[in-house]
Image 1 (cartoon, rainbow, N blue to C red):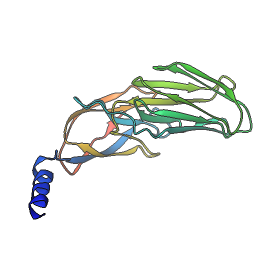
Image 2 (cartoon, rainbow, N blue to C red; image 1 turned 90 degrees about the horizontal axis):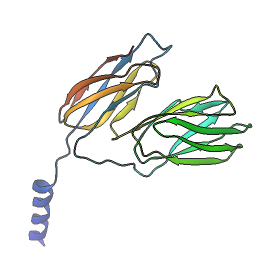
Image 3 (spheres, one colour; image 1 turned 120 degrees about the vertical axis):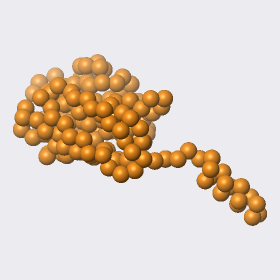
Image 4 (tube, rainbow, N blue to C red; image 1 turned 60 degrees about the vertical axis):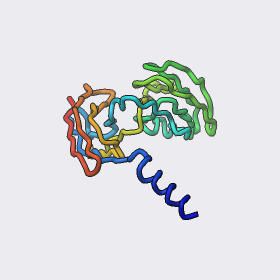
Length: 193
């Protein structure tokens, strides 16, 4: 029995792939928006890894004639559930990387769509043309969305060299080269114009 435990411990300690990860955090600023919120900061690609959705659906609701959230970053292969919490009919159609029309429905009904192409897609309502949101499909789970003050934090980033990008539908994206250490924090700020 002792020999089995020793072999098991040897295999766990010396044969498993180490998982070292760091944190990327910072602030995004811009003079073009009232507040620097809803900006997606993300690692563009992790070479040699095909990452897929966790299988858990993401959610976008329609409340008081507004899509919530305004920007929804997801991983390729994620299904988004579109809810209608208003007392009026809504429609969901998309233009961009993905193009679809889920039709029109009333309160309490949910319709879904699975996003399989990388990039941004505008989500619109043909009943209420002022309604607009975005689904931003990414290759990996290493992303964050800025808060009201432009702050963001991406946890558990594998050590390595990457292209870190900041994106907002109304601004020019910015890319920075970053080197993430096996532990600790890396501070990266952006200014979008």
